[in-house]
Length: 227
Image (cartoon, rainbow, N blue to C red; front, side, top):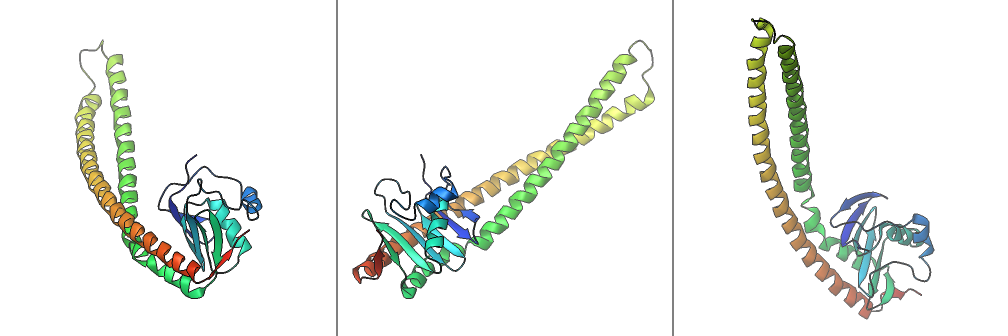
């Protein structure tokens, strides 16, 4: 079973994935885990949920478990599993400091959204051209059937003979547009990969700093142990 590497939540269930979501468990099961076993984490792997306002930054935790934690501790909190033990930190300065660490990642969101919009428009244009191409092919097939029906006649109907060149020209033009869109798609894919690498590097840096912040908070006794 694969566990999510990371994802951020806005609102309740409006999820922006920065990693992959694992196989879901029921919300009821997540609530049952707020006592005892609590949160499902792979082995003794360290994990955290930093919840502030309407957003959460998360590492290696199920979506339903996050909701269970938010239900158990309304308001801002930092839940951590460190070295096999669970703690909840309510210190406002620690939570605010942890959130600030991820601001460089959030700064990429306008660029990510703009790129996503360009990709959606490209896909919409590609689908429209595909439909036009299919329609032309259907019309060409209809011409073929008409020509077969008239194969015993010495003179091909003028309407049929004049329609084919126009349809074939339109098909070639659409093919050229589709090839151009393919090149644009490759460019956008490359831009997306570069943006992902930037985001991953910022994520790795922010998460390393967050664990240092967590360790400092636990050392100061700011973490409440969870039974």
